[in-house]
Length: 544
Image (cartoon, rainbow, N blue to C red):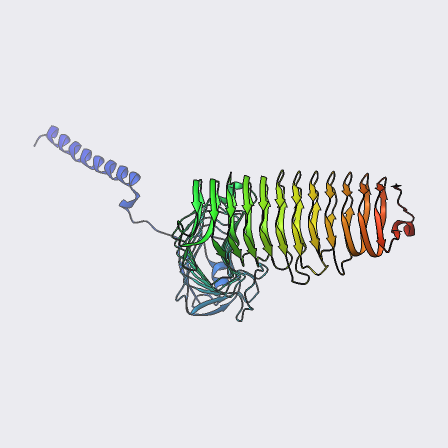
């Protein structure tokens, strides 16, 4: 072999080796799986490695898994990093917050809690509608977390999601909690396969849009399913017919038109919420034990009629709607309000029978609603100290309230209340045993109160007018109150041709100036008491 052949051979060998190295480097740079990868995550066991879950969380790093053996752990665990925390057995691995705090307070993202029995007090009091009691699992501004395969009992809220988004609550069993699942100001959450039973509320959404609910079962709760919000977008959720309340379906209907909902077409209806619907009629239903019996949001030209609605928080609730009718419904035993209208215009509330709607409630309420009519309704409540008022208007204008009748409050609470509401006509109503019969509160101006009858056996005041201007109170019968008219801090009102029978004072004044009294008739005690005189602020008015 000559020298030239030797050089050529060596060059070939070197070329092959160099090519191999290049191929190896390229493959390694493009595919890290060529070499085995390593992970920094660890598995920590409680109580073997650490006596408590909280200590294990403190000692852990992002991405670690904490395995918790059977036993009872009385602690409030704060999780502020990405961890997976697994219980050995969801019946015998118990985390009890014991009113220290939430059993799990989650403030980090992508946390997973699974396989636990979670409670917040060993012997919980009876469930109620209070949100004051502590939650089992509280997600506070957390994102992408998973709460699954747990048993949660005896908590204020089983799982409470506040803020954050993109969380999953799945396949948990909730029982005897004030609320099973409460989602508040949080969107894009997925709630599926949960059972919520024997609590006060089952699954509730507050000011939370964009959530998805599937295959949840709510059973034997005082108020099974509920949703509320401050604007229409917070009601846009994906809730299909796989969700059940008391073995009936949740109908959460979006963007429907020209639909009649009744027991024939919807025989399996358990809860009803209609969002952004038009030309819908809801009739002849019997709706019980939900947050709202019949709930319409963003409705147009729709009617709620001839329904029996009872034992809900609100009987009938209409929000952000227009040109709708609520008529001839029987609304009873609802704890907050019988009929409520919010942010809506041109609403007719007609000939409903509304009675006994619980502690601290109104029978008919309108808030931020204009150009409506409340007429021909029968209002009744025979529970002592259980009804702030029969009809309540707040920030609602150009509404006609006429030909309504109300009885049965034992002279203790108000018939009609106007708060910050102007240009309303209140005419030909009969209110018995309400005191005051009508109460006009601050900044309620240019109202006309005429031809009404207010009477009582033992009520304190017939009409109270406070810090309001340019109202006309005329041709009313105010009978048998201790004081017929109570007028305070108001100017430029007209009080004309009223017949007032009183036990103590026909009129009581305090800084009630530049008002006109004309042609009124006072019977019984005819005195006019100016209480401002005792404080050096006597009233100045025109008397004719």
